[in-house]
Length: 241
Figure 1 (cartoon, rainbow, N blue to C red):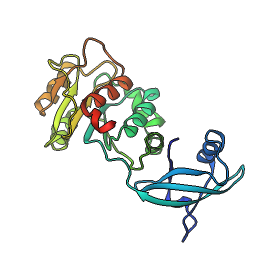
Figure 2 (cartoon, one colour):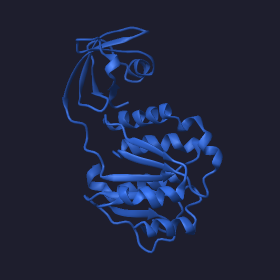
Figure 3 (tube, one colour):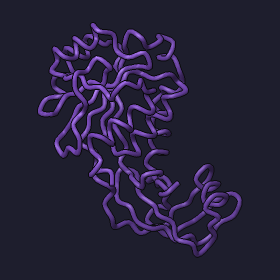
């Protein structure tokens, strides 16, 4: 945890004093090994960042005086369209995307996405927010990504995706791509990444008809949690440094 994300409910009304319990308290106490008098990097969810001076701490709770005066890192100009990963992978992918500054994510169905994945509790709004916050803590960010869930591939691609991708460079990562992704972009991108088995040709064709260009990363076939940061870093490496 490189930044403690704070919520309005953490604050004593009418004061700059925040009180932490549970996971965040345990992390500060056991990992940071902080104590009264230590200063932590903190940030208000969807707001400014700053510092928190620990004034008291015991096994149950921690109190800190908070000062917020800095903007969070700028968002990445990327719309991420992601075929729903395996439940065990979903948490890692959402946290990684949030840590890299992705602010708009669509989780979609595809032919090679098991229907059972849609029943996973890891897809609950509460879990998606929790994993996003882990990514924000890692990257010293505060702004939650907006995550939408779309269980019907064709209606989403035909009816919604063209508007999402408008005025952006629209790319689909697929081994069939005849070119590689561009590098060091500053312009907006809409990126579609398929499931572990990839999009089927029909799905790639539908994305192409929606204005997407297929790009590939070389001869190696990567897992989703590896492909995502690899493509993002290639597209936007100056923004991530």
